[in-house]
Length: 215
Image 1: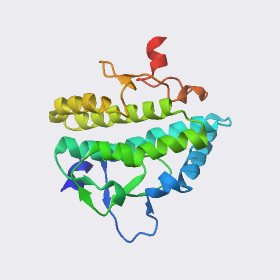
Image 2: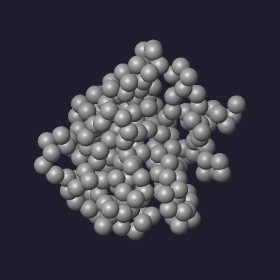
Image 3: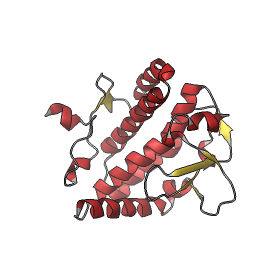
Image 4: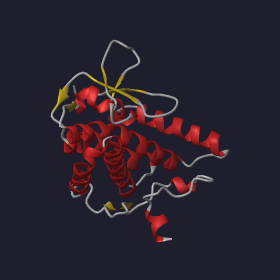
C-alpha cells in the first residue's frame, strides 16, 4: 500500500519493489563507494554540455546533491504525511537515468522516520561532498533543507488535504539538530546558504536562495 500511495504524490516519491533487474545498485554505493564521484562527473558533463562551459566540480557536486537529497527524502516524507510505510533505508537500491529523478527500489518497508534517513543516508553524503568535492557542510545541509521543503510542498500540491500536516512537518524537521539554522520557514521559505547554481552561465538564483532574497 505504501508504494502505491506514494506514487500518487509525484515522480520523486515513487519507490519500486526490488526485482531481479541487474541494473539495481545499493544506495551504499553512494555512501561509501565510487558511485558518488561517477554521478558528480556525469552531472558536470551534462551541465557543461548545456551551458557550453567547463563546470566547477563543486557546482556539479552541489547540483547533483539537490537531486539525490530530494529523491531520498521525498518517499519518507510522503509516507509520514500519508501515514503509510516507507522504504527501509538500508534496503534501498537505485538506478541512474539520463534525465529526471533516479529510480529507487526497496525490498523492505518500515514505519517512516525522517531522522533515520537524515542520519544514515544524507549525513554520509554531506560529509563526502565536503571531503571529496569541496561542497561545505553549510551548503550541503542547506541543500537538504531545500529538499525537505520541496518534498513537503510537492506533497501538498499533489494532495491539498496534506497542506496543514506538510507545513507542520516542515517546521518540525527544520528544528532537527542536523537542520537547525539552515533556513527560515517564512513564508516565503528562504534557505540561509546558496547551492552555487548561480555560478553556471544563465543559472540565476533558485526561488529559495538567500542571495535572491537579500539582493
